[in-house]
Image 1 (cartoon, helix red, strand yellow):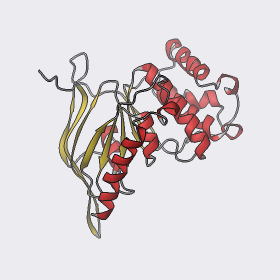
Image 2 (cartoon, one colour):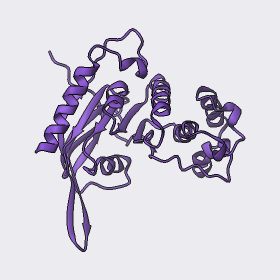
Image 3 (cartoon, helix red, strand yellow):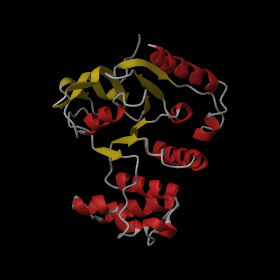
Image 4 (cartoon, one colour):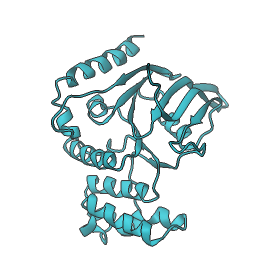
Length: 261
């Protein structure tokens, strides 16, 4: 007997177009896949294919013109999961300290409870920012700014994290370290995460499954489950797993076939 996946969210034939005086640009067409509770899903595809548009639809910032999103919460309820959306830039305010930046969402949503503030303080410790809580963003490195931006996102307790190329602005060495640390810490929380990345190595080392989108109008070209045999389960160690190169080759082949098409 084959058990079907228990999806937290299931996208069914999602379609979306941008409209202007010059005409219609179809961004997404019949995009269908699911995201299991606690799963890490990486989304890759050609530049401009609609990856960020898809995340904006999942976040509720855009409404799909076609298709539906089905919700299956573990407790059986049908409410839409609480979403945290982290963009490419940190968008920290220079006139606020690190601490004042990370509690901004709590202030706006009137959730400055002791429990929430205690959680923020714990996150500052976990992400090695406790000693920088009274600093300004300009006093932080790029990696530290991204950590602060993530704490601001996590402070509201989202069920689903959406990350739109959150490490792309960092230099390569910093990107390796920060992405590995951040995603390892997120895994410990058991949260569900979707991340957009152009870095195939990053997708393989971080994700449980990679969804490959075609060029615009984007549809799902392939889904590749990732199973790495490792003694050390860190994202950095994943790059030395014996299966890593084969997964990279499979992703590269699908994407280069797309370019040839």
